[in-house]
Image (tube, rainbow, N blue to C red; front, side, top):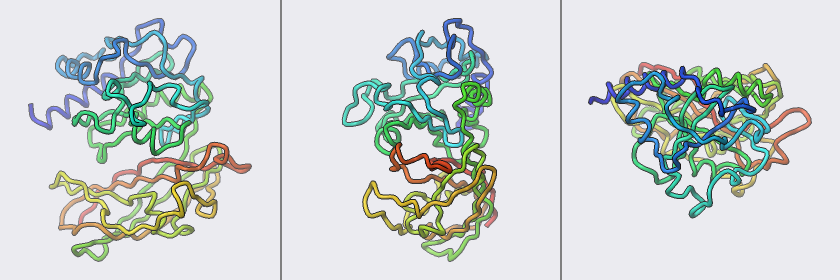
Amino acid sequence: MGKALKIILFTVFLTSMQCSKVDNPSVLTKNDFAIYLLQNPDTKIEDILTKELADQDSAALSKIEIQKLPWLTNNDIDFYDFSCHIAYLKQDKYHFFPPLENKLFPISWWDKPFMVIADGQRRYVGLFKGSISSGVDWPLPKIDDEQNLISNSNDLLFISWAWFYNGTLNDSRQDIEVKKALGKANILHNGITLKLKKIIFDNNADTASVEYTYTILNLDQENLYVIDPDKMGPGLFHYYNNGPVFQNVDEPNLRESTLKKVIAPQSNDFWSRDWFTKIYSGDSITRTVNLKGYPFFPSGIYYCELSFQCVKQIPKSQRTLSDGRYWLGPTKSNVLTLQY
């Protein structure tokens, strides 16, 4: 089966998954939002996806056997930031994970599926991803051990989507029924939206540079503080952010600023309020930043996407201010199509 056909079939499968409704009356009798593990703890993601891809069953989700009790519910969450899909938990996430091995998921949790259910409906399947799990990169939401157990604070559960240019692959985390259920549970925060507005190619030699302009709009009911390259400088800003990522339509590899020069903070846990700009609820800011360190850009058509995040080391006790909160991220922008 060709790669293009596999992607089409997988897209049909994802769409059918999101349209299926739960037929198990024991599910979500008291919870608006929940994550369930599968009934068989030894099941891997390939065990449920390979079969469903083969028969293209429109009721794929309803056939997957899940445990009677949820792994995590809206009652475990202070709030869920829908712009970055981080659940701010009431207690440390280690309460929900099995004993770790070298501070990471044990092998038994590599490629282990989970099911997200919203207001009585089975909405999507994701997987727990170990740092050295199987080489198959499933286009599904992931709870990654490195991002969750090393990079983020103990109370933050991050459901990630690693795919660069989505194309026909839908990001299941954006499911509207999940968003409605989070709102019904009174734990929904809309966070920000990131708009990549303009890219200018500059000094296109062996080491190229680009100038990029982005806008951040605060969709939240709270004022949000985000890091600002105008305040912290581009070197420190790019310590936390990688800048735009490009893909030439004629090449499979991504183009990133792998040779960029950054300025590290004084220590791993150091951060300063002076780095941040407050965006009032409903307002926006626009910034233009220059970034060097890209490989040479040959002429062609490029897809371009920007990721944005803030400082992850802010302690829970300091994230909320009298006039807002620190937004942590990450989130992704729209995809620009560029002719160079």
